[in-house]
Structure formats: structure tokens, C-alpha cells
Image 1 (cartoon, one colour):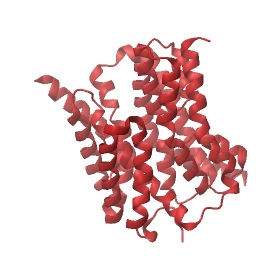
Image 2 (cartoon, chains in turn purple, brown; image 1 turned 90 degrees about the horizontal axis):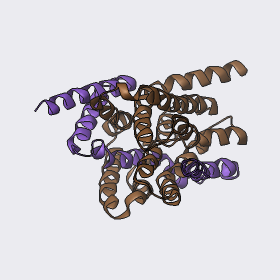
Image 3 (cartoon, chains in turn yellow, green; image 1 turned 45 degrees about the vertical axis):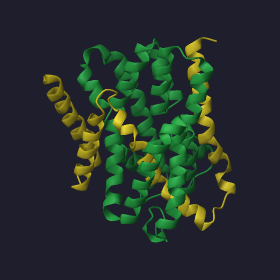
Image 4 (tube, rainbow over the protein chains, first blue to last red; image 1 turned 135 degrees about the vertical axis):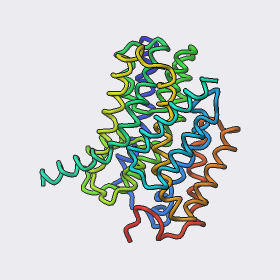
Amino acid sequence: MDYIMLVILGCAVVTFIPRLIPALFIDKLDFPPKVEKFLNLIPYTALAALICPGVLTVDNHLWYIGLIGAVVAAGLAWKKVPLGAIVILTVIILIGVYSFVSFF
Amino acid sequence: MIISRTQKFIDGAKKAVPITLGYIPMGIGYAAIAINAGMSPLETISMSFLVYAGAGQIIAASMVLTGATAMTIILTNFVVNLRYFVMSTCVLNQVEESNTPLNILAAHVTVDESFAMFSLSEDSSIWIYLGIAITAWLSWCLGAGIGVVLLDLLPVIVTNSFNISLYALFVAILTPAVKENRQIALIVLITAILNIVLSQFLGNWSLIVSTLVGAGIGMYIVDDEYLLGSDD
């Protein structure tokens, strides 16, 4: 098989399997309250782990670019700006920061 | 019944709009890397459709560029995407009005963003989830499609700035919970520090280890009544 087709199909299979297993068995599982609590905590810890330290590698050469973006997004969310507007405004502000940095 | 399902699906699709605003530019960014790595436009788009894993695809395309073996790329993707097991379990544990075929479809379209958005939803119907997640999936593929067409027209500053969009969404989803609850804020801080430290030693495994250990520590820190999705 062609190298790239093998990569695509292989990645598709190994990505789908972890997603699929809960779909096949979830009906048979009745989680005790402690496990429910654990599962309810996952969204917070997963988001924290996705953001740190990944956000610092948004630009491989300028680590502070990602930090600026994260601070801007957090500030806008603090002020209860809608999610969609936060995404757009953060990107626009970063384009501004890049233009500023590349000016010097 | 059919109308209420359709209505819920549409409600879910509306909730996905902020995700699509991140996915379309991010999809363009992925397409830029994939095309640069020598993948054809069709291969670039079908990877988004079949694999559907933001970071996993970008890592895979970067590894194709460096000429890594298919086995290495596939194994790396397995590790990077293992977190979907946890997210799929959370989502499918929360959904109501579902059955196995719908669960399998829901499983394929489970990613960080659809999972996070659904965990905030007051209505736990499978149709809400499918509305969110399928809209997000299609926008990711659409982004790759726009990317392969528009690639040469966009300046580097713009494609670089697109990379922040998903992090902006993650931060925006997390901030209200951190603002309102100090216990959640503490567990978020602990997990972030844990992952910064562990990523030095564990590489790609660090994300899933930190997520699970962080939630384990949270069991002892966070009072039960503060949690989302606990409707009692």
C-alpha cells in the first residue's frame, strides 16, 4: 500500500478504537458515585492539560505569542464575552501582535 | 418526537458555532502542513474525515514531512489520541435517549472541543451532542478543504495566528468555572503544573497521565455539589 494511505488508514484505526470501546460497553456499565465524580472532573483537568504547556508552542520561535493569546482569551471570558467572539478577537489581536513584532 | 430530535440537533449545531470558528482556521493550518509534507488535496481532506483528531493529524503530517516510518507515525497517533477513550467514556456516560449505533457515531466525532462543549450543556440528549459534534467534524473537514484551495493566498502571519484559535476556545470554556469556584481553580492549576513537569519526562503520554492524576487529586479537593453534569 502507498505510504500516505497506510499512514491515514492506520491513524484512523488507532484513533477510532479508543473512542469505540466505551460505545460498545457503556450500556453494561453502571458507575458508582465515586467514579461519576472522577469522570465529572475530567473536563477541567483535560482542558488544563491541553492548554499547559501546549499554548506556549503555538509559535515555535516566540513562546510568548501563545501566552498573550491565552491571557487575552481569559480576560475576554472573565468579562463574559461570548465564546465565538473570544475566538475571533483573540486571533485578530494576535495578527496585530505579529505585525507589531515583525515591524521591529 | 422527530421534530424534537431535529430541534435538539439544531440547538446542538448552534452551540458548535464557536467551535467552527476555531476549526475552520485550524483546518486551514493543518492543510498547510499536510500539503507541505507532500500529501495530495484528497489525502489531506480524507485524513480530516477519517482520523478526525486535530493535534494527532498535525503531528502525523509533520512526521510525514520528516520521513518517519508509517509504524512510528501510527503509534504516536495512538498515544496522542488515547485521551479520546476518557472523553468518549465521559460523553457516553452523560448522554440520554441513545442506543448503540448512535453511540458509535457519537464516539467517532468525540474530540476535545465537542466533549468540553457538551459537558457544559444542561440538556444531555444524544441529539444535542450529535448536533454539536457532527457540526464540528464537518467544519474541520471544510477547513481542510478551504485550506487546500486557498493556501497560497494567505500570509504566514495569518496562518500562524490561526494556531491560537483552539487554545482561545479552551481557555474561554475553562475560565468561567475557574472564576466561580476556587476548588476547581486549584485543581486546574495543579493539573497544569503537573503536565508542564511531566511533559519533560513522558512526552506524548503526559497529557493523559496528567488528566487522570489531576482528576484523582480532585476527588479529595472538590466538593461534590460544584461539579458540572451532577444533576443531584
